[in-house]
Image 1 (cartoon, rainbow, N blue to C red):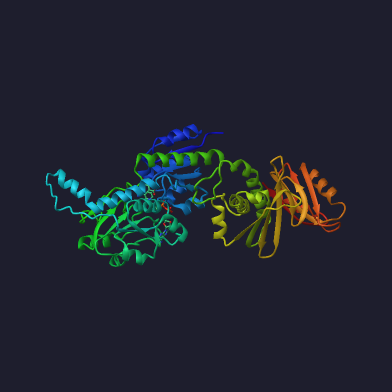
Image 2: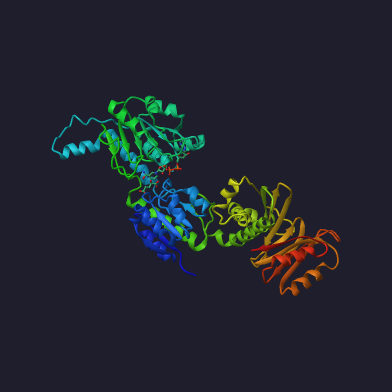
Length: 529
Ligand SMILES: NC(=O)c1ccc[n+]([C@@H]2O[C@H](COP(=O)([O-])OP(=O)(O)OC[C@H]3O[C@@H](n4cnc5c(N)ncnc54)[C@H](O)[C@@H]3O)[C@@H](O)[C@H]2O)c1
Ligand SMILES: O=C(O)CC[C@@H](O)C(=O)O
């Protein structure tokens, strides 16, 4: 099998290159390619993986051209430069490195706070210009001042600890911050307006979402203390730049430290030249340490996925650790086969898919297994779907997905049952993995049977009457179709029976018709696995 190929299209530390090579992944390091969208679109079709920072914009056009791509790895946190819905729809995993640059970015926010408190950049420029303007650069102490943190996640929490160490009071606004976590951190959880009212310094650490866009607006600034100082080392767009410019001009905001801009690279910006603004070119994550961390992590995560199927820090797919990947693999295959079995038999509108995990499989990563089952289920309906895109594709089609887990077990040590509820009926199929690691079907529509699935099969339901087995065998034989295996099950003598027949050749539509005409046959369907 050929080695997977990865393109690095941004300025990642070369540590990533070495890791990919060590892990048996071919790598092309082209740090300028991310800035040339046409060249990226022309090249991307060759690669299984794309490793980026923030300069590469992975648009829907790039994704449309990415015919082999299986994973996009962001060496950093924010993935606003990746069209995740387009990647998901195409079955491409998007992963990031959520912790590798948190400390570095928090330190940049603290550095910005000091720069704003003591006008360090301006004082530096003036001093080096030979002006010695000692009285011009009066600062403020930060000790005893109140820092308002908006967004108290990974970076916000590090900022909080550093600020407490600097003897500041810290208030935080974050709808997802629990009282317990706030107490552990030593911060006071407050509502946004209270933060605006009380903070001497405000620092932003949220992602850019519909709720956070322009969270610092002209209205918000009006609610703040006169002489407030504002820091943004999170994302451009959290601050209304014109409103901040007006407030810096009027002196309402005494200073602002801005690392991120609505339009990047920011070659021009309404904030440039404003009084007491300190700007850096999106340097939050730019330390040797953070760049080593994120390059190493992204390369390890991507190489793991491409070579072992382990999934870490994916934003559009449940995680699968390297340790659990081998144990999970036969169950992924089983779940996918059960899904495929049910999908191929389903002809009417699907309302619900219920997946029950019983026994040891219930302790495994059932999210991943459910994604596999949905993949198998949707594959007969959709051109291309995989474990990344299947849950979203099911949701889009209004299919409800239910998952239940029971750790005790019955006759089988472990099994998965998948039930499809359509407009007309409910049909279930169950299977297990035996000690040989091979998946087996153990029950169809409540009828017990043990069958291994093979590439070409016939699913036949019939009335349990003598003569059926002989007739089907003769008919297939007369038409040159070799039977590899045949398994039967029935609910009771003379009741409903099911046959699963593995055949060596594809069955023509005419022969299907002929099988359908055999006495007592209720339904016959070809299945492909
Ligand atoms: N400047 C840089 O170079 C740089 C470097 C790293 C990260 N970042 C950015 O910093 C930001 C924070 O990163 P993180 O790792 O701390 O993320 P995180 O997910 O750990 O924390 C974000 C926090 O924001 C909170 N939040 C979400 N919506 C909110 C809202 N409406 N109001 C208040 N809080 C809200 C969340 O609950 C969460 O606690 C991200 O935007 C990231 O992209 C920038
Ligand atoms: O890669 C960078 O330099 C910026 C990273 C930062 O914005 C992030 O979200 O991790």
